Length: 187
DNA sequence: ACCGCGATGCACT
DNA sequence: GTGCATCGCGGTG
Image (spheres, protein in one colour):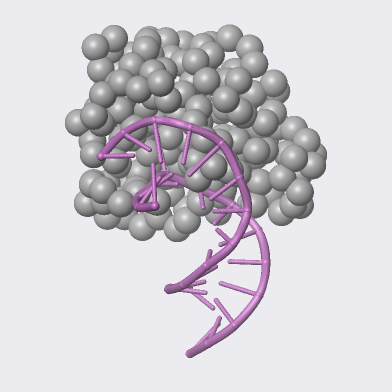
């Protein structure tokens, strides 16, 4: 199981290490196939410009969930990384569903496995992640994060859906996976 | 394949 | 009032 020590490192080390790990919420979830890194010096990060009510969890200890609402409609899940004096987090962008697929279908209202968790908003709907999960520890229920068994092949590229710092290749994906939110070509 | 747009909450200017 | 770390749909190649 991934505990706080795993997350208490630079977000730029943790992000690629999460590809291939398993994320479950109340026993439902799958394999992490796509993430993005956000650090405190990053103009695209919520933490850029200091602590606010929304981003407070990012400034707290590593190994906790940071959940925010996106575009007024969706929820997005981040895993807080780094030391106690910084504010870093990994945005979980896509999963390959493996557990509770029927429940995910019901919550998403679609059948195709590729459409269940291929985006940060989609996977939060499939796993029923909401503001209630913000601040919860990742090594306790309802969360369960399992270490990957083998080192996967990873592709990097620019992050998606941001307007600033678009030149940074801080998006990581499982090479060749059909469950990515978008195709990811080697940078 | 791409592009535009509406839905909707809320932090921030 | 503006701008999003989004998604799904409907239009056009």
